Length: 85
Image (cartoon, rainbow, N blue to C red; front, side, top):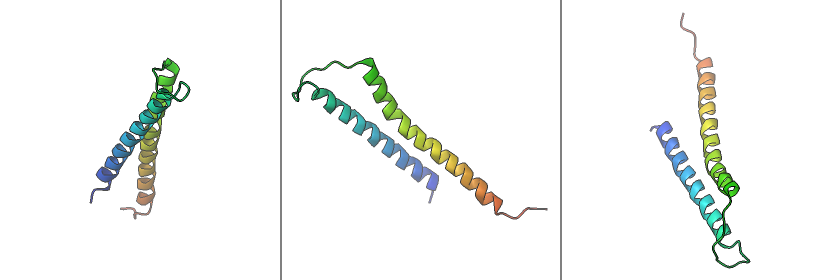
């Protein structure tokens, strides 16, 4: 069993689902923005910037946390190994 490959695949699938969910939520919110009816709405650059940040930041933070946790876990396990003299 390859834990690294399996967890990476879970992270990729979770990131894609996260992005699709946010995009869907944003588009539905945008479509309903004019008094509950579906109409063409204007999108500001600030909203697009926020959407990009909301899509990219959480998966990257999870990836960084997993990387740090792996390094710390490896360091802890190596601390229990006997020294070779």
